[in-house]
Length: 220
Image (cartoon, rainbow, N blue to C red):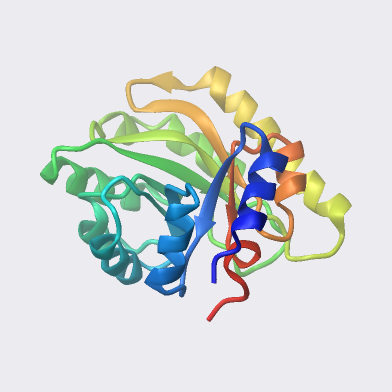
């Protein structure tokens, strides 16, 4: 069940920060409720689930791939994905570029940056991200565009730690935004914040938050 009042309140709280409704594991009727409430941005973790839902939902929806993406799955979403949040390697970027070329598209991507004090999260560290942004290999990719970064804070109740992690990523974002500018790099988006910490993320400069359980209830 989609909670329309909660959606409206979060939108009001966020101001100019975009809200991605994380619809993973949720049935189509819930997504349709969200769509009818005005939501056009949906985030999915798994490629197969996104493909199935995309076929059943209106064409003007913007689909965000927010989960870990394997190179061999890119071809299934290359024709329609709006933004890939979770790019963590040059190899993956090269495959996205290849599939985007086949579909006559330029696919926007975010580099996933590892900011949490946990071992389970994917992502590049700050130096790895800079090395990638400066690489000749990246310059050769004409069918992708790096438009920013995504990060997940540690899963903790320590809000000071969460705030510090988001603030570090925002500092890195600001530095890169003014440093890196080329045909396939135009840093404008910072995707950080989820149901438990989206307001902290917004306060620390996030441009888009990924909210699921607050909108749809706990995961199925």
